Amino acid sequence: MNPEENLCVQILELTKRHGDTLAVDRLSLEVKENEFFSILGPSGSGKTTTLRLIAGLLQPDHGDILVNGQSMSGLPPNQRPVNTVFQDYALFPHLTVWNNIAFGLRMQGVASIDIATRVGDVLDMVKLPGKADRLPSELSGGEQQRVALARALVNRPAVILLDEPLGALDQQLRQAMQRELKVIQAQVGVTFICVTHHQSEALLLSDRIAVMNEGRVMQIGTPEELYAQPQSVFVAKFVGQSNVLEGEVVAGDDRFSVFQSPGIKPLHISRMSQEMVGARAMMILRPEHTALSRESQCDDIENCLEVLIEQVFYLGEEMQYAINVGPQISWTVRGDPQHDRATRFSPGEKAFVHWKPEHGMIFPQ
Image 1 (cartoon, helix red, strand yellow):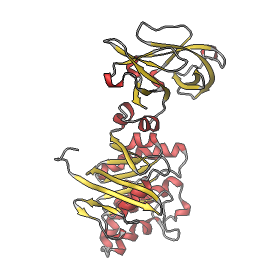
Image 2 (cartoon, rainbow, N blue to C red; image 1 turned 120 degrees about the horizontal axis):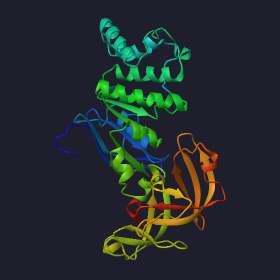
Image 3 (cartoon, rainbow, N blue to C red; image 1 turned 180 degrees about the vertical axis):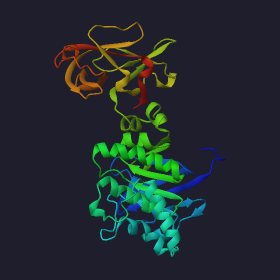
Image 4 (cartoon, helix red, strand yellow; image 1 turned 60 degrees about the horizontal axis):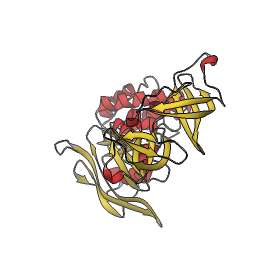
């Protein structure tokens, strides 16, 4: 983090237990002003607990949270400059859209004329003109989500917290709202912190992402950094699809090292340090870095294995093949959509999978 960049949220050695479970373990991270920051992780990783700690819905056992340099220690939720958008929206069912959005402003004693202006502005921002007099039950799921976002924005907080904000929407509406959410965040210039287990959503929305597991941050980086330069096997497997091979790094020459996996011929990998030679390791290969052919088409450096096609999936925009690489080793390979069935590989067919040495990511095991 560049010290000259303005920080909005600082989490310092945050720890929280739920009974005997260590939900958040000495967590530290920083979020910049006007950043769309996501916390990504599997169920039980501590991401939702972290969000609730920032919101003030939980109090930490140890550590502190600073918002714009001010400690949140001991402050209840209504005294923190943060607002939360929940997955179930938490709208008041008996209040109209207008009154749902205006509720917080009235509680703060904001003048009626200012309430009218601010509610009107956010209704336009979330594209809900003409819906002010509707009840939540008269709205679609996407419209309810926009009302919840408008209610959070109208208070002009320093931070908007999003707890699986699009989880209740169907896939098509979810994709549309992802784009709109990013546009709205850029338009209002407010820091967003989003919790999700949906990796493609985090990659699409975020300026930076923190990947969590078992209460700890495994890596923080831009979407591209996490995908292309994962620092651990966990991050490599969790962010994106991965083909995995266990084995050992053995000596090569001045161009490359060699990876040896039981039952599979030696494979070329990027040159490893001397310390890695002889070490157990795991190779991770992204599906898009592999290609299938009916003939062996590799040069003397590129890797090429004879494989068996197990399953074929037509996904419209691409083909996916499940292939058997070795004893109980199944990989996924992607290909261009082959609308002509005659050109596709078929289950039970033998083929060749090939990839470049530099695409095999090696991690100590």
